[in-house]
Image (cartoon, rainbow, N blue to C red; front, side, top):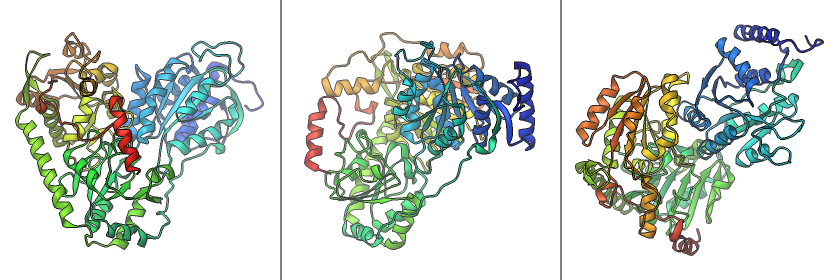
Length: 619
């Protein structure tokens, strides 16, 4: 048809169905007559993208029609949801847990902006997600409804390119370049991210006669080599140190075996970021757990007293290293990272830039298995770890406290999280933790044995991520079950999961810990200024009735005791679909109600002191 005009709507639908059958049988011709949107969908399928989470609008009707036909043919799966934020979170969670790729499809304007905001999760946590966004027309005939209302060209492209990597299909035959650029971001070998593909409303249906499908790029698995370095120098630095802390970030979650060898050979102790829980089992003696602005007694003790820092796969976010004041006695850093910027973050650093796993292997080969640090260092750290263990046990032994807001004794957040997390591990369910108090208490109390048990979105700390992530349980080719532990503040940011979770057969449970406030910020206000302001409810919301209003949801009262919460979780085991448990929890000044704070943070009226210390340290 390359010498003919574009077919009618009915002819086009028939042609697309024929393409689907040819694609399924492996007989799709390399030269095709088709629209830009169909070529885009075929290109994404070739890159392994077959899941599309959509909030269609007037800015995405053409690609929606292509996806309808390809979905009916079984080549893709399309999930219409109620929020672009939810769609983005679900796509990010799917990539995080199963490594399966997905695309988020939006309209122009507000919907695209919502997805753009939510993409901070994918960007911060290094997760490859495609974003297909409607955009203003290329002929500039006047303001397009919902575009950024300024008389300039490509405003949303500029905005998206600032947040991440972006490309506009302004010229239809640039599709191959667009897909290649996207693959380079979404499937980056060491730092995945979001890619924003803008689809002008008038080019989506552009007719491409005689289009050569061989132009469409495929993805490639790329392995980086070990860092190019003199490993004798690396080992000499390790051997000359006496108090070594190994700080592990999200980029090193999967290298537990090599990290353990490094700990055994160096005599160092491990501290991890919240995103790297389970990189090695918490029970391993040299694992001091989490450290940072919130941190833990043992994790922060190791950071505060170490003289050598070995940073592995970490960006050293402000809360992870106490706004760059977390290592006041470190005089030398060895930094393993594939990113030059992250590997050279600190002064006095020997950067090892390359594949982390391969680099660890080279270090361990030269270092050997004999510990070089003083045994006193490990004894001191283990003593503090034991104190931390006893501290956590006190919260387990005192699970309820009298609460002023509820007017009765209720569970504390640490106790509720301990009970729920232990249950999830027994069931072999993944656990997602939402932002705020829930997140902070969670990464302080959990004791993971592997990196695939819990997911704590601390990169962007996006409220509502955990509950939205539940959608990922029902949309991928590798189904799983998950528990989303959330606070009332985070849940009300993204409650549409109650509907979409049932609609798309998600499998999991929402555990809502309700203290009637944004507890993390209330606590910060009280710590910094002695007063709380505009961060709590004056009303008590009946979240249980809300959940009961959605057909298919098993809505349960978690009660006020460990026994009542355990009973509710037992009922969840027998439910097929989404469950919802609401638990009132304590907020107040009693130390048993939380896990405490052990580090520093450059925020509010703490800034002057923290910044002064940072400049004094000079690391």
